[in-house]
Image 1 (cartoon, rainbow, N blue to C red):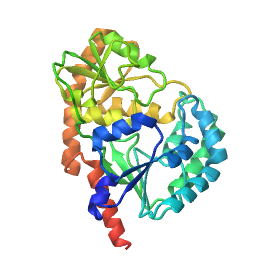
Image 2 (cartoon, rainbow, N blue to C red):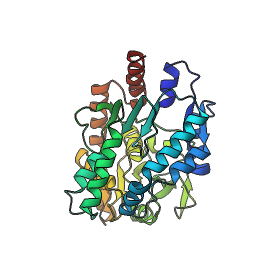
Image 3 (cartoon, rainbow, N blue to C red):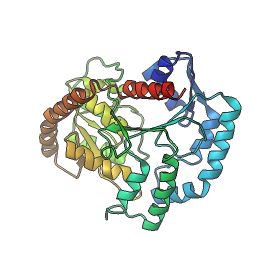
Image 4 (cartoon, one colour):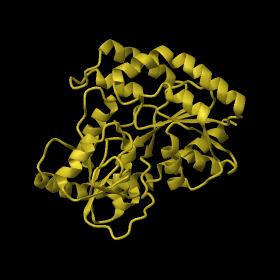
Length: 334
């Protein structure tokens, strides 16, 4: 999205990216964008941001820590960026910090404040309501500073009043596949404990391809573009929107682990969403035959939904559509 905006406003504007995930982040960026010289991975910015990230253990503990430290960490990050760069604008995905940059554009699958508000209405999400309420109000204040809220369709919930709908960016990723046998593909990123992913793959009993073969027993490494191959029966991953988008782009049914206590509440609502739309299912100890039957029923629904999105937006290139909206805003407010 940022690179597409850079293309539109001159092509030489760099994109400052917090370097949070080490070599894995570098590898993913290179696989998707090549060695684009405009991408600047800033380790110091990444270190600051990492100090406030959810580590996957307890979302309630994350909220408490975030509420305590967000103002100080925001000030530290803002000072760093102001010192090192001449910033044109901010584009943030589900931002955690107030960087003080104007204009700023918000991109996500729904506003975090909306998720926290709805979490208070769900018995399955066992987080203190007073904590959720405090965090909701703090996020709502943070979100209010953004000039535009670019919310993906599909997303965790439908875009709210004042949001700018864009299609979920869904494109067929790179592939290095040759001689593919019938199997499943496991995306490892985004989940600290891969046991649930391993269990789903083992239940299906086909050859396993994985984004990180070192973490999935009996698997062979492959790039996610392998999902476009007809030999791949299902995509197994956490219910995050990166995985959902890849499944949608390749029209591959998604199987996700059930929501677990302590997880980000977004995962709970994401699972509900993909099951409502017919894009995927949660694994609830189904038998292999039941899983395969459910998977086959999903395929035509995924294709039909993808067609609906293209008819509505003209393409599945959400990043391009977002860049056009941001460019217009910058021109109108020059």
